[in-house]
Length: 250
Image (cartoon, rainbow, N blue to C red; front, side, top):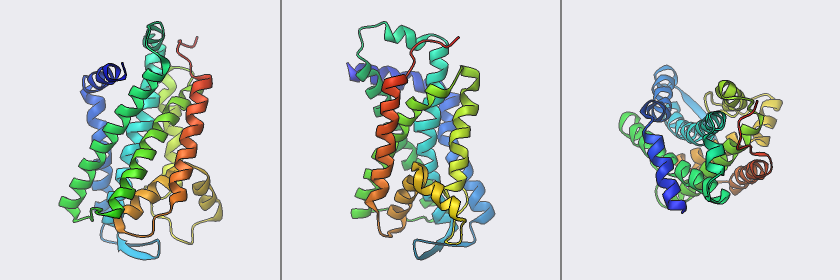
């Protein structure tokens, strides 16, 4: 049954070509923009100096996963809830676990495809490094855990979205500040403000981005980054299971 639901989710996704296009295009757009503006510089990360173009290839891959698995899922579910699609799905014999599992698996597949495209583009256009061997295995682990966790958080964020019209502003408001404060858009050095570092340590965005980046550039991989991201995913799933609404809010 999960396979049939996954097929339906995938078909619905690609039948909305505009949304699919921008999900894949945004990371590439930002990659080109940031590397055009800052790509000739150097950044000192994890005790190693590297070109900012390499830095941004890894960070835009992380950004793409967050966009596909958190932003897209949260906005889409809020819209489907308001137009009654979730209520109708709830009224079918389909188990709840199948509904959530199909969404998570589809988000993971989209994340893999998106990261592959972003990495290939970065390697061809900017000669960015591609992880091999043990770094590749660590990269896959972080990618899988991150995709599933941010998808679960996408389920959870619908709890605070009052209606479809506010879905995009609410979801973006919860993630855009973290993207800046976690060094995804702007590299953060060791001289960053203490409160900025604290925010990065608390929330999952920086841990996910650091795990992806360390796999790209071959610096030491910290498994606690995986655990923090996974813990947020479990928390998001628990919130979704307890408070997720299938019916439109009046």
